[in-house]
Amino acid sequence: MNVRTVARKHVVSAPVVLALVLLVLLAVPAHGQQRYTYVESPSGGSSFALGYPPPVPEDSTLPFDGFRTWAALHARHQDLMMLNDFIDGTVVGQTRLGRDIWAYAITTPAADTPDGGPKSSALINGGIHAREWGTPELTTGLIEGFAAGAGDGWLYDYLLDHVRFTVLPVNNIDGFLQTQRYPTEVLVGEDPRTDQWPRDGRMRRKNLLDADEVLDTVGDHLFGVDLNRNNPPFFDPGGWTDVETDLTYHGPFAQSEPETRALAAAAVHAGEDRLRWYQDTHSFTQLFFSSRTENDRRNSIQDALLSTYSRFHDALSEERHGHGRLYRDVRDPIGAGIGTTAEYFAYAYQIPSWTLEIEPANGGEDYGGFGANHDGFILPESEVARLREDMAITHAVVAYRMAGPPSVRTVEIHSSDGRWPVLTAEWTRTADGQRSLEARLREPLLPGLDYRLRITFDKPMRWLDRHGEVRTAPGHSVRLEPLIWLGSPTAATFSVDTSAGRWQVPGDRYATDTFEVVFQLPESLDPGAALASIQTLVINASDFTGQPLDSDPSTAVDWADGGWTGYENSQGTPGDSGGSDATLSVLTTTRGLARIWLRRRG
Image 1 (spheres, helix red, strand yellow):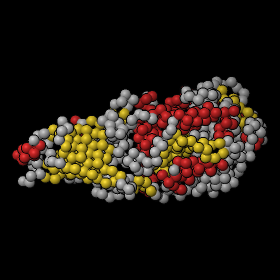
Image 2 (cartoon, helix red, strand yellow):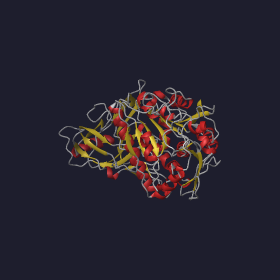
Image 3 (cartoon, helix red, strand yellow):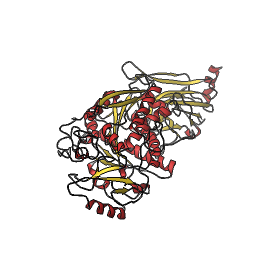
Image 4 (cartoon, helix red, strand yellow):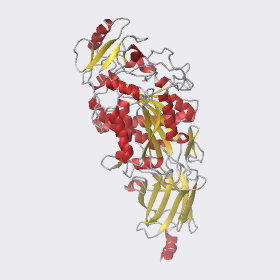
């Protein structure tokens, strides 16, 4: 949780409950602390009524509609690592109390992509604020999503081949364990800012610097470091406060805490030279705090990525549950900050980087609750499985987009019966990291005959729904079929009717990476008096998030200094927009001259 929304997050929205809470709080001694209990229904005394059962973590390693203990979550991570050779876990540091902090890199054992290029990298952090129980379930769900999705021949297989997706499930393990020891109890009083905020127990935020694990001690109540204020480049003066008992105390110096240093080590495990995306996962208010730098290209790419994230997740939730969940972006000012991990990764690595604040948007009332003090941090158990599963899909889509823009890999044109090849072309990676084209043009396209055009791209291009149907991705209005024409990049002599084609399931490497269509040149097409005329084959397509083709596959797309490299538009200009591929040519001829080519076949 960021300070920018702290006031909003502590508003008690139900008037009756607010009045009860204030009456109770007024009875607390000015310089004392009192234990309160979260309960389902109003019971008077020292309690906060949620309106739904207070969640209690269970020792189940398998996911269910509820929360798991830290021991169960950790056992689940370890089990998945042992069972899958594409999950590589390592200890990246220890907590203040000496507990191991693990990070898990998820990718195929191969160092490179199937095309021989370097993989991209992403890093997701969770559980940095102890009381935000939804985030360890979400981060664990990401690992579970890869384990369940591997072998799908589509999205997850593509990600495993192209992305080193790294998850640090729980950063603040000490604090998380403290919240689970006291899943319904908190202390109120002695807070340097307000006597209304519950602290420690279920509502512990900070790590355990100078704190113990005994709920009723003042030290445990107030001490510790807010790990999400402990980072450069805006640690000082942006770290909010030097008051050690404050909720957002930023620590003695930047990255002073072992948990913060463990996150930096996780970036190394992720492959920091290949990082393209970082997320710190929090709750609540259902928004992003995106970190902006002086790099306009990076900012623009981040804006597009967050748009994909928000539109997809909102539409997916609407489709699956009948209720959309739109996440909005609150952009940090350029050149300023408060010491968050997202700021550190944005400035140090020049990559899209944000703090995700998961649902609810308002508080427990979003789920029919009473709006009790701080109940936005207490997700009802009935919402956990949905959140975990939907977020796993959404994060896979974001990783898919940041794996890179699509490009054409192979093109084949044959007679419809497959007997007579017209064109075969393939782009392959060379030793210098670029691509070379091997193309063979055997004869012109003859009017009046049926031809089969097969185009294979280097990534899946269309969404598959749960029934295996090819469609547009939720929240995206991408044209289902590519545009293909003969002529020039700006003018068509003949347009292929791609509505008659289809994306292949299975495809070449992945479902929907290949498009096939049968077409026929009209007899009226006149190439002139020559035996054959050269026509450019133009292919215009985008992936299922709307990211256009790399117009020049010879310069392999990569990432550096906050932007894409080797990514050209239709005019051949490098940048971040892409365009149409017009790198191949075919021959056409007249009907009268076609018999010469037909005799050659015979």
